[in-house]
Image 1 (cartoon, rainbow, N blue to C red):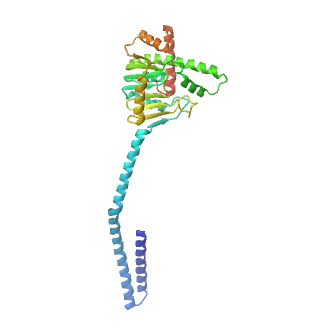
Image 2: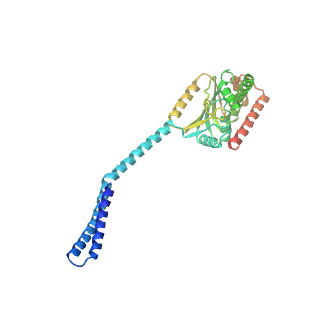
Image 3: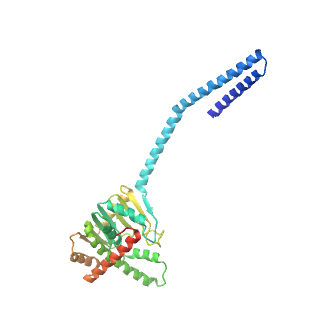
Length: 322
């Protein structure tokens, strides 16, 4: 509005100056010509001086009023942005990976990066097969604590069996399929335990706790992040690999999951420790105590080969190499 009024006034002065000068040129010498010339010259000078004064006034007003307001606004926006970033870091995941049918290479590459940068690896899941594969494929040394399902407990595989059946879809003979899936899941736990034993050389120690009723969601916690894989989520339930979220260290979920892991780890359950010095006979004694199965040498080799077959297949699909 200021510039509109000022511009209109200056335009009028210039128009008057131009008309007066033109009129002065078309009349004979005398008083009228002198008056028109004086009017044209005066209005032109007034327009030029007024324009200069307007620029000086506007510049001073900009410095006195607008610039401080802009700076205050920028400061408020920076503070608001910092607050939102703080909230995001505390309550929102840094990465979200949607459910997939095949392993997601980006998901696995980022998790392997976190694993390579940590000293302590906390795992809470079903069988520990994936954790054992990651330990074998990475090149570092960790202290590992793993909480897995107890194969002796009747209800320890129920939740994962339902997830498997959702992935497979409807089946005509549901009861037979359910029993078959349950047996396959018990076998996965045995394979996972053997896999953790085979990965013992990568770790200072692996403490394994088998609990009767493990949470359905898988937890993988590192020094700087925590990963939660939502087997309990209905969305994408027909995908083999559920939706996964990554939270940074210091976030609300990181602290909550660490406390929950400590609580679950302290509960009663079969517990044993594997170190690089643990012999096969010592491990088989732990294996028998946890699973209730006394494996023969041939049975151990069968489980080890099945684990390595799983490792090769998963590593190829996830593009992990090895």
